[in-house]
Every structure is written in structure tokens, then in C-alpha cells.
Length: 319
Ligand code: NAD
Image (tube, rainbow, N blue to C red; front, side):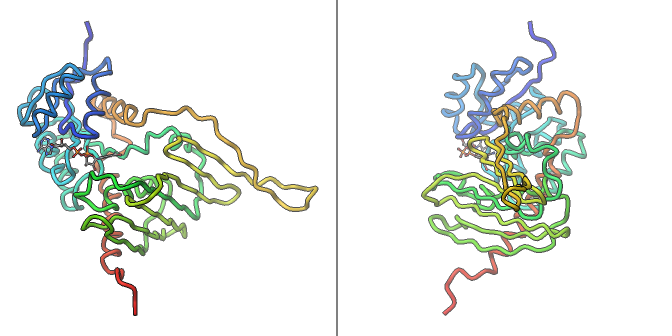
């Protein structure tokens, strides 16, 4: 018989929540008490797959669980997250933490008031290629990232900045130990009424510049980041979980330095499983999450600055 199992539930079992439910169900230290979704037939289907109970009203799970994943549309994160946090139930809320920074602050405050764990689902932090970066990024001076995908027909309740770019904002903020001092951006709605493609240029107090492109109406799928720093540059392909480091090697024969690529042999991870395991570990020990509500809020603050810069950029060509 398994002991000390964390009683968990998943709220919202649409596209991503179903994966959360499967991850919890596969863990020995978890009792998956239930899944909840307004769409009860969807909840029943997922509950059957993972051998748990389906609920249409997530509030029925209060008092039955220690920890939940909130995988509902972003506009519901504050209400659902706060309902659990205020009762001391630990919450892993999907990214972005909330619709705006005011809502995000309320979630962070709810967690602080009840001493509950609040983790935000910035999945890429648990990508094997990103964890392999530890200790290798010392003085990044230029970072460029591209996250492109064909139109998804999902998550269109938010713009591409909150949908996709927020992943790269969070990663870049975790790499550059300095404040953002200026933001320039352009973004355009293509398919939806929200911005579907955006490019932002962040300048940090220490001189580092980050150029970030996010596009959900692209022909191709690409998820890469290049980090340039003195003596080397690092390339990560998030999707392939691949990392290449180009080192400068002095070439005495030719008389000039050369860049030599080294492919790192990394352990590929199941990022969602690692994220959930990290959350459960914090839930069990009270340890601060790697991506707590604070990191989720800071990423959203920068995303909001980008949204504001986009709002003043001209959508029409200047005549
Ligand atoms: P989805 O529309 O496929 O699923 C959302 C589900 O939530 C639906 O089944 C809906 O019925 C349910 N729901 C809505 N309101 C509810 C409520 N009050 N109570 C219970 N259930 C409710 O959306 P999705 O693509 O799974 O996205 C969900 C969240 O996950 C969003 O915040 C999105 O930004 C995030 N997301 C994160 C990543 C990532 O890489 N980390 C990827 C995709 C989506």
C-alpha cells in the first residue's frame, strides 16, 4: 500500500489539462482524486483514461485535495487559483499566470496569505536543453529567440505575447541578471482580433539586448534561442532539446581565431512531467518553486510592457 501520497486534481482537462492528468496518474506519490471541467463529458472521458472521478464544478474538490493544476483558459486563472490558494491548497497554474499584472498580484498575495505553494507553468524551464545551460551563461550580451508555429485554433483568448512569447520572456529574464530599461515592439493581428505575430527588443540595464519573435500564424514551426556572450555563443533548439555551444579557438596556423561547435550530450526530459514533479516536491516540502508566482508576475510585467509598446506601434504603413 502506498503511503504519504499527495492528493491531487486537475482543473480543466482540455488540450493541455489532459496531459497533466496523465502525468499525475503515472506518479507513485500521487493519488489523483479527480479531474474537473465545465465540459463534463470531456472530464468523464479523461477521468476514464486515468482511472479517477470526473467533476463539473471544481469547488467540489476543495477539502479533498492538497494540490491542483489549473489548466483552464487564462481569464479564469485568478478566480480558480484563488479559490484553492485561499484554502491552503497548492496550485500549479498554467502560463500566463493571469490576464494582467493586477490579477497576477492578487494570486501571489493569495498564496502568501495562506502560505500555499504557487507555481506557474513556464514549461521550458524544465526542458533538458535549458537545464543543461546551468553555469554556462555568465555574461549574455545579445539574445535572440524565435517561437513560430502554424495557427493553432487554441489559446486565442490571449494574444501571441501571452500565448507564446511569455515562454521566452521568462527564460531570458532567468538568464539576464539585470532590469529591463527599455522595450520596443511591433505586433499585428493576422487571423484573430488579437496580435498574432510580434517582435520585441528588450534592453537591459547591464547593456544586454534581447530580440524576441513570436508568431502563431507562421508556415513553419521553430523554437530556438541564441545567446551571445564573450568567448562563446550558445544555440538551443527547444523542440529537439538540443544545445550547441560555439567556442572561440585560437588558430595559430591560419593566424585567426575560429568558432568550433560542440554539441552537448544532454538528457532529454519530459518537460511537463519534470515540472509537475518539481511542483509536487515543493508541495511536500514547502520549498519555493523554481518558477513561483513572483517569476510568473515578473514575466507578465514585461509582457505587459511589450503589449503597451505594440499598442503605440503603427499597424498601417506610413504614407
Ligand atoms: P483548452 O481550451 O483546450 O482547455 C481548457 C479547458 O478548461 C476546457 O476543457 C474548458 O471546458 C475548461 N474550463 C474552462 N473554464 C472552466 C472552469 N471554470 N472550470 C473547469 N473547467 C473549465 O485550453 P488549453 O490549450 O488546454 O489551455 C489551457 C491553459 O493552458 C491556458 O492558460 C494556456 O495558456 C495554457 N497552455 C500552456 C501551454 C504551455 O506550453 N505551458 C501550452 C498550451 C496551453
